[in-house]
Image (tube, rainbow, N blue to C red; front, side, top):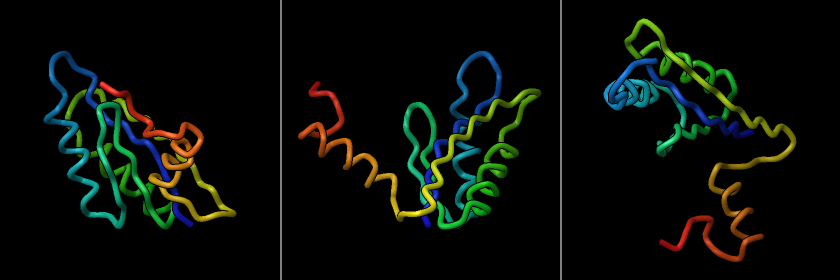
Length: 103
């Protein structure tokens, strides 16, 4: 079954965190996960929960700093196969339009 998660890893610091966030995202490359980064975090998909946890740990450990904040939200739908894109499509079906603003 596919496990979908939202991961946010960042140093607790003043100023730009983008360089350290890039290190966290780059660490995901060593794992069998699909991911997409957005302004608020990175959505990760994995076939196995252990692989997802290992990838999240690697991302956390890749960030330098005296203090690192990591948030991991997991959707482990065990009785049905799903993907991150399928979850968005389901919302869009209800909306009857893309789930984005028209700006």
